[in-house]
Amino acid sequence: MESKVTIKIPRELYRRLGQMIEGSGFSSVSEFIVFVLRNLASSGHIAGEDRLTSEEVRAIRERLRRLGYLKEEE
Image 1 (cartoon, rainbow, N blue to C red):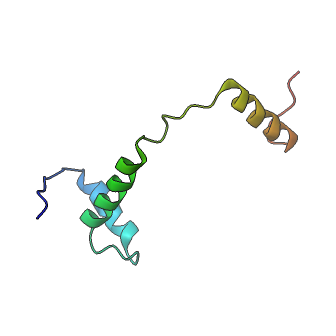
Image 2: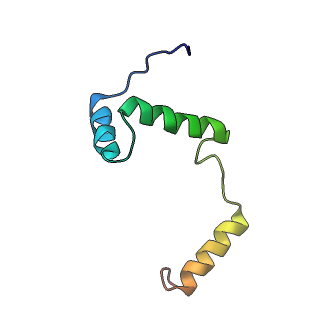
Protein backbone atom coordinates (compact mmCIF):
# COMPACT_ATOMS: atom_id res chain seq x y z
CA MET A 1 0.00 0.00 0.00
CA GLU A 2 1.17 3.50 -0.84
CA SER A 3 2.28 5.67 2.07
CA LYS A 4 0.38 8.99 2.21
CA VAL A 5 0.84 12.42 3.76
CA THR A 6 -1.61 15.19 4.59
CA ILE A 7 -1.54 18.45 2.65
CA LYS A 8 -3.44 21.43 4.01
CA ILE A 9 -5.24 23.82 1.67
CA PRO A 10 -7.60 26.71 2.44
CA ARG A 11 -11.16 25.54 3.12
CA GLU A 12 -12.56 27.93 0.50
CA LEU A 13 -10.30 26.39 -2.15
CA TYR A 14 -11.42 22.92 -1.10
CA ARG A 15 -15.06 24.01 -1.42
CA ARG A 16 -14.51 25.49 -4.90
CA LEU A 17 -12.71 22.36 -6.06
CA GLY A 18 -15.64 20.32 -4.76
CA GLN A 19 -17.99 22.40 -6.91
CA MET A 20 -15.69 22.06 -9.93
CA ILE A 21 -15.64 18.28 -9.84
CA GLU A 22 -19.40 17.79 -9.55
CA GLY A 23 -20.42 15.51 -12.41
CA SER A 24 -16.82 15.14 -13.57
CA GLY A 25 -16.26 11.53 -12.59
CA PHE A 26 -13.91 12.33 -9.72
CA SER A 27 -15.20 10.75 -6.54
CA SER A 28 -13.56 13.27 -4.21
CA VAL A 29 -11.57 16.47 -4.05
CA SER A 30 -8.55 14.44 -2.92
CA GLU A 31 -8.78 12.24 -6.02
CA PHE A 32 -8.92 15.34 -8.22
CA ILE A 33 -5.97 16.98 -6.46
CA VAL A 34 -3.86 13.82 -6.82
CA PHE A 35 -4.76 13.70 -10.54
CA VAL A 36 -3.75 17.35 -11.05
CA LEU A 37 -0.51 17.01 -9.10
CA ARG A 38 0.47 13.80 -10.91
CA ASN A 39 -0.03 15.55 -14.25
CA LEU A 40 2.02 18.52 -13.08
CA ALA A 41 4.80 16.29 -11.73
CA SER A 42 4.93 14.18 -14.90
CA SER A 43 5.30 17.26 -17.12
CA GLY A 44 8.56 18.14 -15.41
CA HIS A 45 7.88 21.88 -15.23
CA ILE A 46 5.45 24.45 -13.92
CA ALA A 47 3.43 26.60 -16.29
CA GLY A 48 4.99 30.01 -16.58
CA GLU A 49 8.54 28.71 -16.66
CA ASP A 50 8.54 28.84 -20.43
CA ARG A 51 9.32 32.39 -21.49
CA LEU A 52 8.66 33.82 -24.92
CA THR A 53 11.64 35.05 -26.87
CA SER A 54 11.68 38.68 -27.98
CA GLU A 55 11.08 37.46 -31.54
CA GLU A 56 7.99 35.51 -30.44
CA VAL A 57 6.66 38.58 -28.61
CA ARG A 58 7.26 40.72 -31.71
CA ALA A 59 5.43 38.19 -33.92
CA ILE A 60 2.47 38.02 -31.52
CA ARG A 61 2.23 41.82 -31.36
CA GLU A 62 2.35 42.05 -35.14
CA ARG A 63 -0.40 39.45 -35.47
CA LEU A 64 -2.57 41.29 -32.93
CA ARG A 65 -1.94 44.55 -34.81
CA ARG A 66 -3.04 42.98 -38.10
CA LEU A 67 -6.17 41.61 -36.43
CA GLY A 68 -7.00 45.09 -35.13
CA TYR A 69 -6.44 44.40 -31.44
CA LEU A 70 -3.45 46.74 -31.20
CA LYS A 71 -3.04 50.20 -32.71
CA GLU A 72 -0.28 50.89 -35.21
CA GLU A 73 2.84 52.29 -33.58
CA GLU A 74 3.46 55.93 -34.42
